[in-house]
Every structure is written in C-alpha cells, then in structure tokens.
Image (tube, rainbow, N blue to C red; front, top):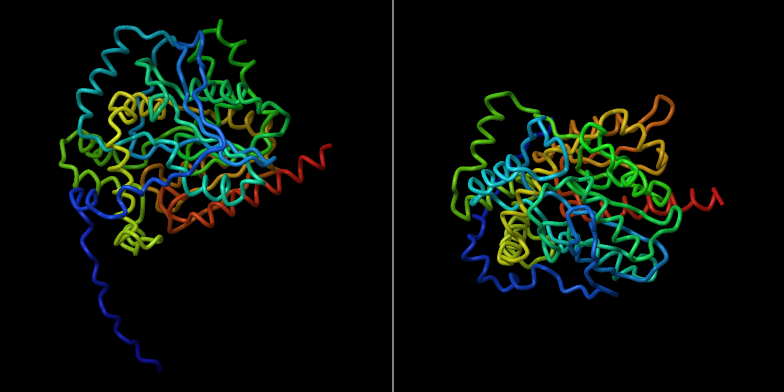
Length: 401
C-alpha cells in the first residue's frame, strides 16, 4: 500500500499594489508596441446618429482576413426588458444614462481597447504576417474612436464595423473570418441577423437588411459570449451583486475584484508567463492601470454606454437559427470557460443549442478550468483553435468553387 506523501503548502505572494505596479520596470511595456501595416480612422454612421470616427489598425498583409471584435471586460447585470420605443434619444433616455454615470464613478473599467488582442495581433499579424491580414479596431465609446452620447446598441456597433470593412474593400464573398469575444461576440452576431422588429422603426428595416453581410463570412467564432444575458443567481444574491457594483472602492480593491471576475484564482497566482511580473494577476492589473491612465480613451461615459448595449443585446432562438442558416453551421464555432464568472457557461450552452439543428450541431469547445478571457489565459490554445478553424473553413471555400 502506497503511503500518501503530505504536500507542503503553497506560499502565495501578495499581489503588487497599484502604487507598486506603476513603479515596476515592466509597467511601461505592458502594452506591446506592435507596428501595423496601416492605421487610420474611418468615418461611419452617417444618418445613424453620426458621423463618427472608428479607429482601426491592420496587421499583416496575408490573403486570410481576420476581423476581431472586442471583449466586454467586467460585470454587466442583465438590463430590464423595457426599451426605448425608437432609436431616437429622448429625455427619459438621457436621464437613464445620467443616473448610471452618477453611480459609476468607481466601477472597474468595462470597455477594452484594440490592444486587448495584442497576443493574437502578434501571432497572426506579425509572426504569420504573410499568411494573415488582421483587423483590430476600437468600438464606439472606447480608445481612439469617437464617444458620442447616444444610445449604443450591438446592432449599431455591428453596422459601424460593416461600414469600416466596406471602406477597407474587404467585401468579397466568404472572405472574412470574424472572431468575437464577450461584447464582441454579441456584435458579431448582429453582422448576420438584424435586431428584433419590435425594437426598430419599420422605416429602418430595408437599410438594416442591406447592411447585413452573412455571405462575406468564411467563419464565425463566438467566444465567451451570449445570445442574451440572463441572471444565473438567486434573487437576493443578484441584488447584492448589483448593489456592490456601485459601492465606492479604492483602486486596489477594484483591481482585486476585477481580476477575480475575469480569471480563476490559481491562474492569477501563477508566475507571469512572460517572466516580467511576479504573477499573471500582476500583469493583468498593470494592463488595467495602463488603460485607465488614458483618460481620453477610457471614459465613464463610454463605459456605461457600452454596458447598456451589452445588457440589451437579445437574440431569440428564431434569430439564432436564422444566423446559423445564413452563415452555415459548419462555419460557426463557440467556446466558453467552465469557470467564467462574467458570462457563466450556461450562456454558451444556450447559444450552441440555439445555433444547432437536429441533424447538425454547431461546434462547441469547452475549457472546464478556465475563466472569461480565454484569449489571454490559454493564449496558445486559443490561437490554435482560431488557426485550425480558419484552415478548415478555407477548405470549405475551395470545395464550393
């Protein structure tokens, strides 16, 4: 009989404080300086509350076109079902957003900049630059893009992206490999299927239908996202979570809460994979501090307006079926972390169920021990998942010729 050898307890170092992080030698380079092939701002949304500028970069010059949509980084409670009766912004809407802004001064950052994809940008757009052209951009409300005070919706953000693609000339059939994470996954769904008829004015429907581009998609990867946000906790726990969002907290408490919402504790405590910070968690906190230091790129207004867009995103089972049929189920994949606290894994299961048919299921990859930000936590596996799916769907393209 083998005697079990007692294991020594793991000694965990305390995470660096915000004051220590900004003095760390690696802090200034936590966002990598990756030079794009081209960068500019595209004027979009004329006649849709604009015009407004969307900042973008293209990395790499290969024949395979990747379009990456950005993640929603922090907790968004499900929004009430009541919606404005039209896209127009009335007094009640202004009051709603103003009330949110007055409460949100200490909420941890919601939106992400295009640099959130820097690990994928380096791999696809630099290490494999002759194979891929990778488009990254800041959604309205964040980074170098404009931040209009208006109602944001995932459908409008999708139309921003489509107009950007039109201006770049990325308009060929089955040309685009769209990868969307979290909020970006919600926006990516809108590229194919219009918003519910109840939520748009009838006069705008022909314009919306004309903007959709399912025929351009070679593949669609929906990561850590949802067709709609639903409460997965009991009433009192959900109420407490909402209240806690708006309680003022000092910066180190905010960083600790944010990290735990996004990543499992054991991954945060592990040594920094790049060997520069004491831990993975310290690197994540440094990146968040660096983003927040850009007070023009990261604003409370943009944060709240993007949060409202995510909270109101809603794709019905019928719309998911339409999405799958327009793109093709063999061209869609879903991935979700089993320890995702931001968008719990049940959302991924609902998404796959809605996209699948009785005789053809949409591919689902489950990461049972991972959290919300798969593109960071399991970066090599994430990149391979995308790379393999691009190759597979490119083969479908050749077979259709």
